[in-house]
Length: 393
Ligand code: PLP
Image 1 (tube, rainbow, N blue to C red):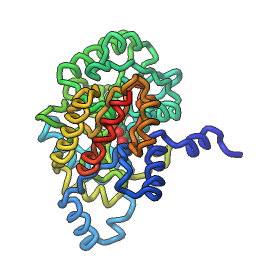
Image 2 (tube, rainbow, N blue to C red):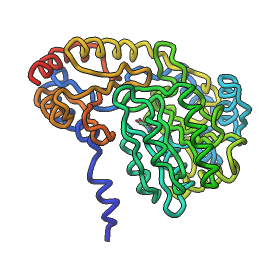
Image 3 (cartoon, protein in one colour):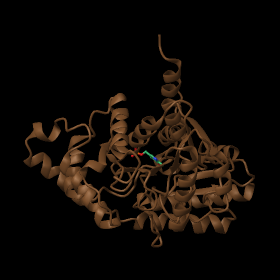
């Protein structure tokens, strides 16, 4: 017998993947240059030269059994030290290797964190719009997913709505800033206010309410925007980081969990996260990538190409009458669907081979997402179609 639940997960693709695969088929039929695919968040800037050079040097100089062998479950100590040093320098922290666990990207970090704090009747709060995979992570952790409706004016946190949803079962709030899909970044004041609210509610209910800070886009910010390192303001934070986007390494599956000593039950929490990862068969993160990080943990991406795409698309869409909040980070634009129905708009766009993702699975059915990690040339060539779609609405 086969688990119906797992069969459904495996056979029913995410809406994003479905659109992406439709695009691949269409490219074969009508030619690559005639399909305008804004579906997937696959980085489009090359991996940092130093990362490639380091990997090459590791392969050429290291004993292959050492390079490709298992590492300790939590990750290579020198890699964790290098990351801790970098975070200490950037954010004035006092972290060491023991505050970090290396993971297979942010996905493994987030789901392991959720599993680690899932007790009977647990609830986890997400703020719309949110990464659709959270729904599956919550379900497989046995947690109820509770959604705070979107603030569609600025994509910030609706604190009144959030507070109403916190109760004695609330174990965590997932914070994804810079946000996929809106590109919103929460200010220091917002994080401070959130921390104070969770502190007060945690006292009221007699247990910590964690922030799970899902941060694969931390380095992808524009206009000098600052991304607050949340544990500085709220100790009960589980930072889930990934190099997928910042180093353009999504297929290499490398990221980390970071919990400071100041978090409640810090050691036990990290052990529980490690246990949760183990329970899903994540015995260690990819070893070559771990060793690469011992040399490259302090690298930052050059986001100029993403910034240029963001500006070109935003300016053109605004000119055609679309409404959109200018993203401060990540590499997406989250646009109000003309007519108010994103599914209907996405279907109209698809008939013209313009592939956009309706916001329904992000908890925001009136918006659609455009990934701006695409070629600038494709953006330019797609603009007449956006104009046509706006005029038809
Ligand atoms: N969280 C968010 C908000 C994302 O957008 C993504 C990927 O797109 C992930 C987590 C998963 O990232 P990773 O490739 O590091 O597992």
